[in-house]
Length: 452
Image 1 (tube, helix red, strand yellow):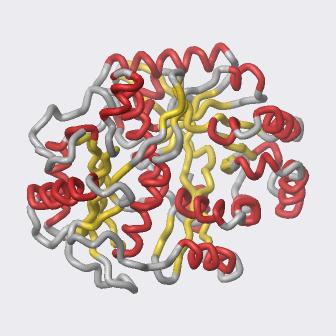
Image 2 (cartoon, helix red, strand yellow; image 1 turned 180 degrees about the vertical axis):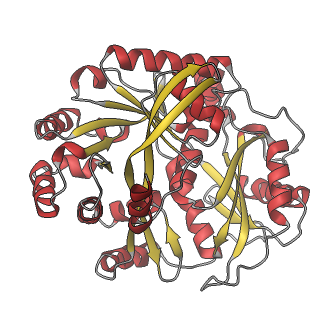
């Protein structure tokens, strides 16, 4: 990738390498959303609705030279996955990630957001992308650059892309500059890292940490005279955390836990979220299940199984209706300790799910040694299953492997009816996604449960 201004030309509608939409699809969305890109009157801070950023890697051509184009392609796929997973965690409105030329990625979002919040999002995204990437040839250390802007009301998509491209080219030439606004400002101070960490220490007592619930549904596929059908029933929900910051607005789980990690506050935060989620779930009718995400800090604390058991006893939520979701990233920090802790939890009738399966380079040892009950597919594993036969074949192979290991498959990120039918046809037992429901409050989920 050179430092010249990007030439944002038309490409096919979906990128063959990453599976992301291309710029044609992003242009259409951007043009539609930009018509209503003015200030949101109900926001406590000045906030426009439509935002965009362009992310790329500085001197990425050296990766191809050092490790080969196959490794370079793999790195781009990983960056695409990190970007989409982070956006899914942080953004509550509509958004789209797209592949742009030169190994860059475009992200557009349609939700009220202050300038400070969008910059914080970009900085946290850059941190996520910059995490070391382990490959057989060595460890890749990526250097992301981000150009960002807030879309002007009625601004054309070509103007947005042009402003981003020019700003990105400037950011590429500065060795120490990772994030740059399209108006030429490198930063505009909102809250410093130290201030955010201090804010978080008080956030629990101020009741700023909100727990939302993403509904999950059980699937039953069958074919009849009227064609294929996928009956469903509400099976439970995954608990998700949001920080309602008084000055920056809503902060998603990814940024929230990144701040908590810097403040050495992950365990208290995770314990608070678990207690609030269990307290809410205690009012759910049986057999609805609750899924909680487990962090590396949780498993590193030897008292975690005991603390969780105490929280279960305090709230009265049954052990056998709780699922703990762990990711590969959590497991690699200390595999032996994770195995012991998860085995202790499984012995208490708590179920274990391997989360974000397919998002990274899964060590199949996990499937052999951990007391797993579910494989939870990353959304990247279902994005292209209705258009690409290879994507569908991968899903089919994963489902067959899971069934051979007596594991049930949960598909996340289901956003269309064809996707829902496809995962049901291939034997996925459960799914979650915006096709049926977005994350909701405890009260809204209880109402949904009563209707079901």
